[in-house]
Image 1 (cartoon, rainbow, N blue to C red):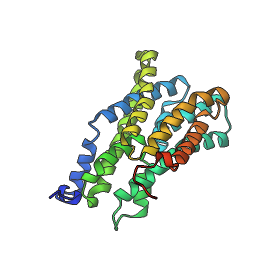
Image 2 (cartoon, rainbow, N blue to C red):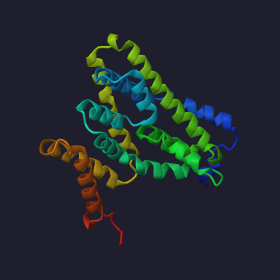
Image 3 (cartoon, rainbow, N blue to C red):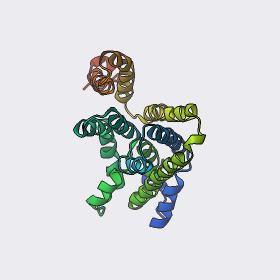
Length: 251
């Protein structure tokens, strides 16, 4: 007889033990890839004239690499504060589904709302992918401390990366910084594809990738937004058409 998930998850341990296990989770390839990407971000911020304190503040408070890039681009382009704020907010809307799927897996009947709000700040692509893969192996009563140990350590590691790059960026070739920065979209794309549980998600990714170059030529200011919106809409419509329904589905 196959054991249930609850029977295969160890129930022993303490909050401190699971906090430390969360910290240990950062010894993984996704964490190192993200740190490498933050090397590129810090180099980009430094070359854009952003002070070290401001770059660290962005990393702590925004904690979404694409949004941080959008923020710096708005600053260097001389965009108004409302326009920059809207652009950063739109770039982070993609994280809302991740928050809504992961937070219920972390909470218990005794978890306070302010704790969940605090945890949601750390949910970005890397944190979501890694937590989604591991949280089901953690006893529910220890999931919040496990995630705090993992996510806060991940954030602090990248703050340290930003600080080090600002101190030693002059010794790092610009080509290396650019290559490391390019790792971010590659990793995000492959990890989202690997963790997609529904075919409609992969269909939306394919449609968005196909439409991206077209919208970049037509409307470069809105290319990512339109590619995502149209790609998701196309996937939503096609997933509900008869040709994409699984065989034997009478619904």
